[in-house]
Image (cartoon, rainbow, N blue to C red; front, side, top):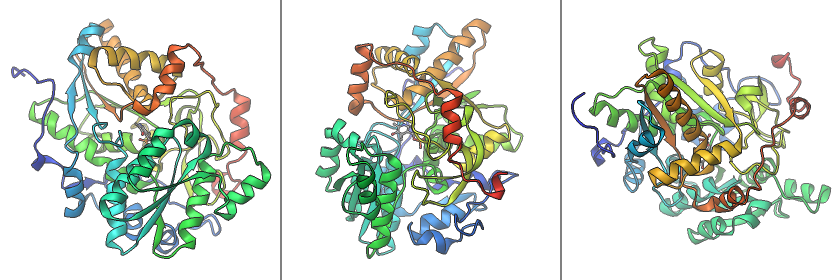
Length: 459
Ligand SMILES: *Cc1c(COP(=O)(O)O)cnc(C)c1O
């Protein structure tokens, strides 16, 4: 290519995707169905509609529609902060002395600071369309709660967020931001639900957990009128909404004739990775591309690289349907010292299937290496990355350094999912050298695996 590629590969507003891309439609072997935990039969839309909004449920179960039209009311929301920038990392390439070309898709330019807004907007829109008046959800680190607070404010819905108690104390500014957008924040466990009260009775001094916050939010939604529960990752409809990331990245690269050899994303529940790779992995499944796809997870919560492929609950309280996925067991809790996010025990079932079938690679990284990479990156590229995103940065840098050894001029694309402004206590720990790498032992993992349900499908 003789045209010089600019540092920012701009798209215009007209080029924001009008369809979401459903990768399941192109998979020859589909992921295993979601099971009802009582009957162990595939869940029906009616089962899920007791908890979730109708259209997201339809999307959750739809394996066949390849391109799902994005309603105008959601496109409008996307126009407020999209297209997200696609940036050529010229400075990072130079700092590494690599012949590789590195690009990153930056999803942190909106106020919530991450890609999560792409699904929050869609889910709030559908709730409004369905005639609901309120939503409930949970948040751990706070990114999803903030994204939902923004979306609920935009569409005029009430939102109750159960925030894991310890993070509501550790992240007062996240809490302030959600409340300023009008959300009602309840530190979890709380005395406002049965499951919260039970948890408090068992352990009055508890810090709370994501699993408990999920149970409280679901209980609240099921017990209220015109109210449903929304989730920010793991499920297929969330991955579908996040496909705007990959489609925009592909459209911008196509303009310059650039084809990625390697695509890298961090993996918590899998939504940003699934969204980034969606349009590219479709071509790979069809046998039309040799692109490699790499999921990067924390060594302290290694679902893909050390987990089991089994049916498991999505939450610690064992209330959700069963998903077949790579899991460390619903009872697995990563070390409290882990500051890098991506703490979820399981993984989206589509990505789990793609990994199982060899279309996707995975690796895990220790958090001190991840923060080293974040700091090297921000010094040259200028952007303060979320610790989650820094997992992808680490792997991208490693691949670029590998190219230096072999002299190959590979094209690397990674997802920079968010900014780290609310993670400065983690950066402070890094600067103070109090971050350590606590990698679970095999015995720790066995304790988690023991919480995976012993059902015939898992034997
Ligand atoms: C939530 C989050 C992630 C991880 O979630 P996925 O569903 O795996 O994408 C990654 N980066 C940021 C900035 C996040 O907020």
